Image (cartoon, rainbow, N blue to C red; front, side, top):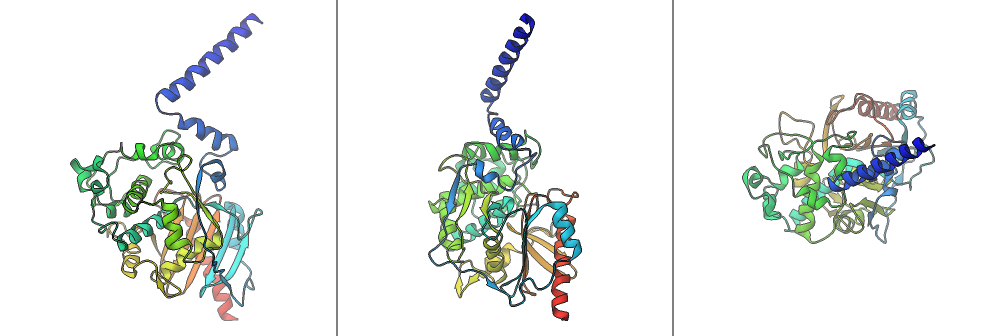
Length: 387
């Protein structure tokens, strides 16, 4: 018994020293990571984790505009391949919108058209659009304005060359490790850190800005800080006033923050539903216009959905670009397979939300599930056309 007491005492001391070391070395974010992710049975961020974080509200307006329902709503059954991949990868929502009407709509695991789930990096498309709006409002001069104009921490060396357009197009040269499963990567730290502004302003620019594409979530986080400083508004409010309300979103959304009333996680984490996420697909499909009102300049829409670098045709400014079956698609993409996929010529929007994407996943890679969702959705549409 005496040895057992000594052993337990030793464990307590070791635990106290471990916790003390974690806090002393500014790794206390790991405590929240363990509580939020690992103790809930996950290895990475998950769809409903917004409930464990502080959030700001993206308010809906007083005049919601529900989607029209197509006359052939759900008349065509989903293909066997679609049903199989939904089960395999844990799809919670799958929508096909044709000619601005919901043509096919399916939910799983108790989710429905009003259920919130995490957008993850689909938020990057929203942030780039807020950049465009800030340019339209004269708060930011252009895509070429220097980040140092807003944060003098970047006025030396390579940092002095960094522009807001570089941040939006993933061409910053920032020192950043885009790893989602390592507890020690800066991406994980950002997800759980309680002072994102301080963390971001410590970063160094180690590569030549504006020369090549490299997907880094830190780019969008810093861009969000620039937008907030330029406009004097929280991004949640700026998004609500200029897009969420004018596009008639039916539900309030939430934007995760680093602390109560703090900085939004610009690179991720808007909690909303499939129908309201789809509205940005329609806005861009219609060249930035909604009900006759130009919410975002059509020239900026074209710019954002065009690759900046010939060597990296998969990315524009906050939007992903994909070719399949002789068609050009642009899309919002997020961790674990959150997608709003747009084919403007066919007037088609495909939305998929869920727990996983296919196992060939890689940072910046178009995983096989994307091709499956597109191919099978078009098979369903072709069945309708042949009736």
